[in-house]
Length: 273
Image 1 (cartoon, helix red, strand yellow):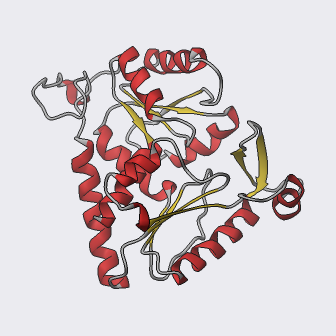
Image 2 (cartoon, rainbow, N blue to C red):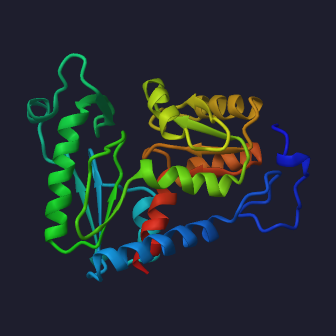
C-alpha cells in the first residue's frame, strides 16, 4: 500500500464513507459543497428555471444504478433520458458518425455487445444540437454521460454537467491526497483517461476490465494489480459498471471503490433538490 501523506497514520474515528485504511473526505460532504457552489454560480448568472434534469448518453439511455439513484432525490416526472444513437440502424450510424482516417474517435458499447468507433467531432456537433433543444424545452440541468471529452459544448440557460470537468476535482477532493487506481473498460481508453485525470494530486494507476464480460476474473485481476501498485482507492470509470461491481470489490479488497457515474448523478440530484 502507498505511504500515508505526511507519514500520518489513519485515524479510525475520522468520518469516512467506508471503514478503511484510507482517511477520505466523506462523499456526501464533498458532493454537497460542489453542488452548492455550482448552484450559486448558475442561479446568479442564469436565473431560476423549472427544476428538471435531462441525461444524454451515446447509446441507450442510462439504466442500472443511475436511474434509481436519481429517483431517490428527483420525481420521475422531472427526469428525461436521451440516447444519441437510439433508434438508429447500423447503416444510419455509419452514415452520420463514421470517422475518417486519422480523425479523433470516441468509442461506445452497443446493446448487441460490440464496440463501435464514432467521429468525435460529429458526436460533439450532435450533442450540442441536443443540448440546445433540451434548453428550449425548459430543462434546467443537463447531464452528459458520454465517453470522451467535448470541450466546445455550451449551455446558455441550463447547468451543463460533463464528466471531464466535474469528476476530476470531485474525486480529488474525496481522495484527499491518496493514490487512486482507475479501472477502465478498454485499453484504448487509457491515454485519454491519463489526460482526464491529470489534475489528481498523484498520477493514477490504470488497469483494464470490461464490465460486460461474464464473470469477475478480469475485474479481480485488474483490482488486485492496482492495489499491488499502491492504490488506496479504486475508481470504476465507465457507465457499464454498477453498484454490484463496487460492492464486490470493496468486500474483496477492503478499500474504498468509487463509481464515477453515480458520483456525477448524485451531484446532479443535489443541484435539483
